[in-house]
Every structure is written in structure tokens, then in C-alpha cells.
Length: 302
Image (cartoon, rainbow, N blue to C red; front, side, top):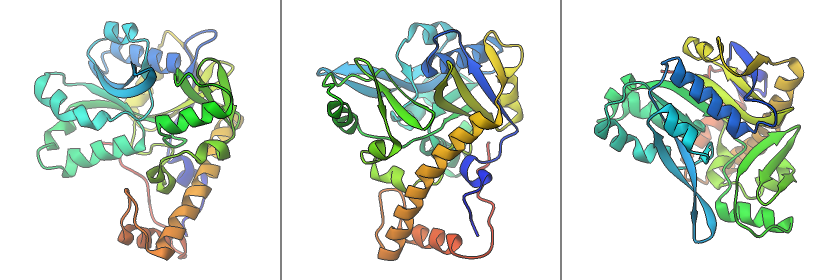
């Protein structure tokens, strides 16, 4: 039977590190310093991510292609939220001659890339282009309108988002100031497709970056040999994560997955498809979850 054990929740990982760009660092700072180090080591020569732009007085996420360390340092709004990274893959692989591309994204982004690399007609050659996949621990994607509603409930109507991160079981959104929400409050505004996701920890990546903030540190789960090099001889603070830090992230992921499993099983019973799963996949998951045999659900990192 599939169970909510650590492997199902977090996936396989060889090491877990805490990293900090410096005093008063934010998760965004910690992700940026990790990528800058990857540029310095020659592990990557470019990176796909997302950025924030202002449009009609509100924050809008959009995919971005960073072509150098200097460009990354100059982009203060390099972000790690959902932003259509896959939509620019064809342009990048055809227009530019980069050979060691990093991609930063959530599990749905990485799943799409992995499938296109090995099953997508016309995209197979990109298997050689990606040198590093940084998966983002996912609390679910809320629409900008949903986030604005959350902030309005706290009295903020600016519509601007500087950062979203987790800390000790709470979800924080930084706008005009820092606002804290319970997972239940945030979950109400999560996109429906995210409510049937079973990969909140981004299996299928080289390293999972957890946008948490605990004494200025963020947590990373290392899943591949090439990712281990990211944490060797680095210009930032890095230390092995303890059981407590790992357990806090595991517990939050467990609570999210409980809600998602309830939604998935309910849809399977009612025969209702979603924008992510069809009826057959619902039925297969329902059968797996309710039977007595186990299945290796680990995603392979290509």
C-alpha cells in the first residue's frame, strides 16, 4: 500500500543542507547565491526561471532566460513561483547556443521537461542541454487574484508580491509588509490542478530548494551526484540540516498531501476529471492507494 512515509512525501535524497547567503538573507537571496555559485563552478552557463513585472498596478510573473551570472545579479526580481518556464523552451533551444542550462521550477515544470526530453517529438535533443534541475518545494500555486484576496483579508490592497516562503508551519507573503497565513487559509486559494498533485517536493530534480526561512537559512534536498558539487567550496554558509529542520518541512508537505489525497480519491469515486488528471489516472491512483502492494513512485532525474 502506498503510505505517507518519508519516501512518498520527500522522495529519495542523499543529503540535506541548510544554506544562507548572509545575514538577513531571504529565500530569494539564498536561491540566487546558489545559482551564482553554479555559474562560478562552470556547472551551468544559463538558467530558466521566472521574474516579476508590474502590469496595470499589480505584480505579474513571467518566464525569464538568464544568460550570465552578471545578468542574474542584476535581476533583483528573479523568482521561484509558477511562471510558464516551459513556454520558452523551444525559443531558447533554437535561438541560443547554450549547452549547460539550469532550470528552476516546481514539479509540474520539471515533469513537463522530463517528458519532453524523452517522449516529446521534436524535443528529444534537449536531453543534452539541461545541466541542472532545481525543483521548488511546492505549497500549491495560487493565482495572483487569489493572493490579492488573501492580502486584502489582512488589510493590504497593494497587489504587489515580493516573496512567498514558509517558516515553522506558516506561509508568509511579503507585500507592503510581511503577512502570515495558515496552510488552510492559503489552500483555499490554490489552483485546482495543484490539489491533485502528489509531488510537492519536486522529485525528478537534481536538488529540491525549499523556500523556507529559518534564522535566514533555506533548506535543500540533494538528489543527484552533480547536485552535490553545488555545496562544495562555496562562498556562502552551508551546513547539514538536522532532523528538526527536515521534519518541519516533511510535516508541512504531509498536511498538503493529505488534503490532495482526499481530493483525488473523492474525484476518483465521482469519476470527475481535472485539468491535470483524467479518469483513468484517478482510478489507477485510487487502486494503488487502497491495495496492499507497493509501487516505486520515484521520478528519475535525467
